[in-house]
Length: 368
Image 1: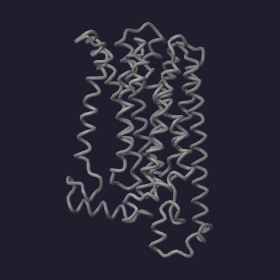
Image 2: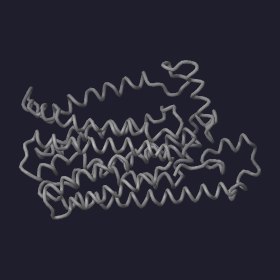
Image 3: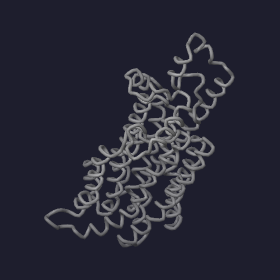
Image 4: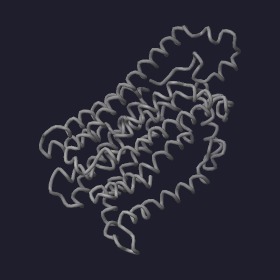
């Protein structure tokens, strides 16, 4: 993260997006890992994850805060961007440490839940296929199963593609907007706020609809396609107003195509060990795209940033194809299971053994 921050700080306009990068680098990986602490059924996971990811709307407010902190340039011999890291980064670090002690790992250890609420959580969890008591414990065999599951790696590839857009857009949006006209730093920061707000609100709505219909892939592909169109607008030789409209189109699909797969993959992993393996790989591979982002948008290539916007367009389009394929594949898998085509796998097993198969059980239906 420090390498990325240093690279960005070399350009004054890019300093304006530093706050947002720090938030994405620290906050999103941790919120993704804490999804194992969400006690609600998997049918509600989309809206729960949206509450985490859409908190990136703080990037809009953080931009204005960063503008104010920028006037501290030279205080105590430190550059303004260093003060941004210190003032905005310390609360994240402190809260991260506190979370380790105050956030429970399971309903049984949640001191803030009443006995009746704990029992309700247990009953709701056990109604889901594969959610046995043993499945809630960590087993090395589940980790190995996750490492050998090709579907997890496909989701990792899709996450890398969309996270490239996330890091590039959230970090360089101020730079892109600044090059569209003669704006002051404060005006540029103000112009980023509507984009972030639209993206966050859209994701909240899409996540709610996704939970209601239990469809992840369709919404990810649809909104990802909107972002592809937005990048096409930025690449076009159009007026500044049209390019600013393109920024809104990108924001419209940004958080949806980035966030829904973060709920989709664990939805299909009922066993704890495999779910944490899948989530860890997904976040690690996805966030590694942040290393590439600073090299895609260089000042000399503004204001159209053909390379940065072109790569982002291509990768988001690739992610849409990946998620469309996975939605089709999982739907086909469900159809085979409903038709009984995979029942021969469990013909020799007891009911208890079948329950321990997790997502490999023919009785388990994938979220598509």
